Image (cartoon, rainbow, N blue to C red; front, side, top):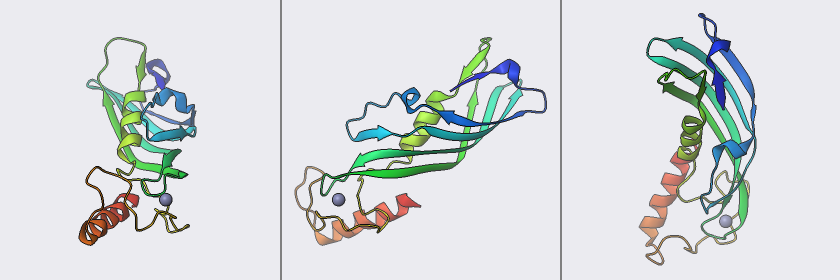
Length: 151
Ligand SMILES: [Zn+2]
């Protein structure tokens, strides 16, 4: 996601578009696929560098930690913000910031029933982590955490 600095007028620039997911260069084993990234950004230049704020949207294919089924997990980052120092180059690449923000929104323990739209066939079993079956209390804690992450 390269930004040409000359495109940015003094008053700033609003930029919307779609970027191929390949720019994310994601090779995490748990990430099966990534949809194109829709972005809407406000760009501005100051003496300190390029500022970008806005939103990102995509969909990531994940594998459920319980039933191992693949499912689509929508990503929406509403408070994307990046500041990139200017190096004298004509372009600034926002990809590392975009990549980081998208990866940060992914659940640590992806569950296919994250939104309640389906019932996980592996529900009640524990297939993730190393410690074997969690206690009921632990399972509840993970559930609560998952719910928090979805928001
Ligand atoms: Zn599942």
